[in-house]
Amino acid sequence: MEHYKNKGLLIVGHGSTENPDSSKPYLDHAHYIKEQGIFKEVHCCFWKEEPSLREADYLFESDEIYVVPDFISEGYFTQEVIPRELELHNRTEERHGKTYHYCDPVGIHPSMTDRLLERADKDSKDEALENCTLIVVGHGTGLNKNSIKSIQDQVELIKKTGKFHTVLEAYMEQAPFIKDWSEMSPTQTVIVVPFFIADGLHSYQDIPVMLGMQKDEGLAASQKSVFRNNPYYLQSKTLYFCSSIGTDPQLGEVILEQVRHFDANYLNKSVSLALPV
Amino acid sequence: MSIYTDYLTQSMQNGFSQIGQVSFKNHHDHYIIHHQSDNESAISELDLLSNEEELQAITVWGTDGEYRFLKGSTTLKSGWYYIANDLENLVSALQVIYPACISLLVAHDNKTIRSQSLFAKLSRQTGMYGRTKNISQDGATKLIAEACKAPSCDKVCLWTYDSEHTQMPNTPIAPQLPLICQEPCNHLVASCRPIVKQEWEASQAAQA
Image (cartoon, rainbow over all chains, first blue to last red; front, top):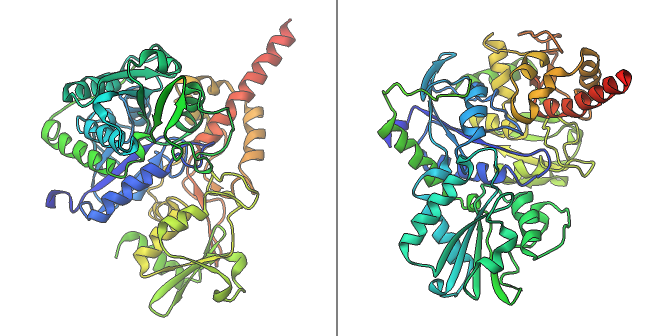
């Protein structure tokens, strides 16, 4: 880790102009990494909040900066918006007197499987996991095939562990729909883990409404208690609804894994980001 | 020491002790930060924020009860103070309240800051913001006049609809360091969308 002592780490998040809890996980991940003293500097920047991606340049004294998108999937933001805003065309690029290394997003790293397993195990209290159905739920969109690939990969990896009776993928805006959770689950007990970074409108409001847990209340995430009332008894089943996977401060470890992955696979190689024309 | 702590040291020596709505001062071997409206308050009347997480939390909700997604908003709550143990901690704390504020001032001072006009910013948007580039100059100018001023945001813009600058319009006067806006924020970009829609509907109605 001495290798990073004079380098910077930039964690890129989405942020929100509506949800005050949106940026907290990113700041928590940054804090987790700062505490370890691995990098000279650790900063966050956001698409929708401050500091913006365009202000990120000025935050660092370091000449070499690793950029890790704290996003769940590869897609529009990681392949188009972030490189465009940071003016990156290659995995490693020198600009404005600094060298930037653009890493893969956290959500596609294999170690996310451990985070998912830990979250499901912890939030389902004393349930025997081998009798449970685990549903990993994401946003889903017809616009980008990559947006669900990370969830599909995780579902396959968790299936192989044999820890659960059934492991399923589900989405808000494409089939299989999360609103059909009860019908698709063959077991009495169901655990739902939102595959999002922040507990925002989707995990606190939209998905609970789709699960039938609550009506639309319109409150901020931190003002609700949706994760504190487990289990729920709905549609003749026992349902555990977990907090978003990104709210685990240990996700900082996944960010570090992506930096190491970059060094092992992309450093000193000329790799284009193949941005859309 | 860093370029940021050097800048702040120099600024304090030149009489600067405020940025945005926050006052900062040297006190023995540490630094005290509080809301400028609490300048006359006894420290015992204020709540101590013991770490940067608590400091960050004070920036989330405004005096109007609204979520402060724009940190240049002049709705920062008062009634608190924070102790920074050293200059590095002071820079960090100020940038928790006003992200990148000192970094941008340093870049401005070093003449390395880059600016971008609203039109240039809109021209590179894609996806749901791709159509914002169609906003009229009149519509954009009115939007900027409304959105880019207190209480919404009190930053000093280095840009207009169609021009960009690397110098502030006025030299900062002690004790107030300015908050710099080097290019239009994404909130402003998003705010262009409904205007573009209204302008398009109006043009359609005029043709009908």
